[in-house]
Length: 326
Ligand code: XMP
Image (tube, rainbow, N blue to C red; front, side, top):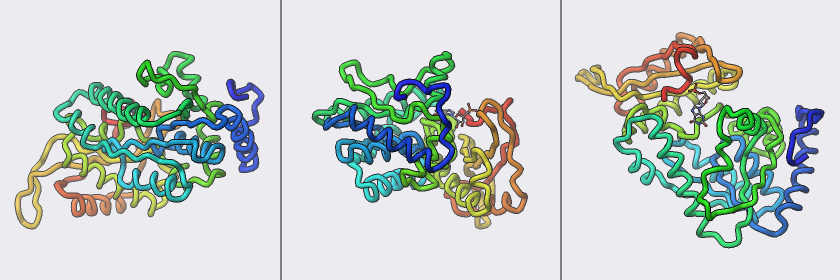
């Protein structure tokens, strides 16, 4: 059961089934790990958070979580990881603020694929540096899920989880949710006591806000993306759209336009709002945001986000647009 998803496996659809799964995996992880240490890169996303909560239950302080803040996370995310895992679940959590390291490496880099490679490569480096500081770690836990395995078997995408660490760093893998689909992972996470806004969160790309700051990332545009995204999320939650719309975020492109603020000319950034619905992210339709809410969003973003004088709405479905801008 730990290696393959059996064809006749019952889908986890209820809290009771999730509890049974948790009990079984806790037993299996204890058998696999014994009294050794396990390392986990904890991003705060659904999969790694559920693995962390499961392993805390199974091996407690033998789990070492490393949360790397690459400076491209959404507002409040690193704080929530620290609050939930260190303060509430009493996890052994190492927090690394690597913001300057990432942003310095990304300075002046405008090609989207190069940006992605820098972010991915730097992430591995920071994580490996932290791992080298620890003694006696023999296991690496990962939030691999069943679709990751299916996609890499079909050659659709390389299964990124397992690769990447330097050759000399060899760990045995612990992948307790690898036979689960995403909806099952969420039910398990809820049963493990994770907050709803962690378990039912919208998808968020690995390169984070970096792909929502098209072209070369600058700190002022990055802050404008982070602040406008926080306003959008707050308003969607207040207006009952957070659980309904599949993915919604803001983008700040690298051009300025003329506007007026306090009676004076203001040459500032624009914020683009994107809100889409999809089944599988291969195609997507645009959400019909109520006009009054749109006006309220424009008002808040142009008055509360420094350096922004204009708000636009992206009406483009996928195709022809992809969901993200880069
Ligand atoms: P696109 O932009 O290709 O996005 O229509 C489809 C879905 O994938 C997410 N996405 C990513 N997720 N790393 C990720 O983990 C990435 O580099 C990445 N790029 C896009 C995107 O947010 C959307 O949900």
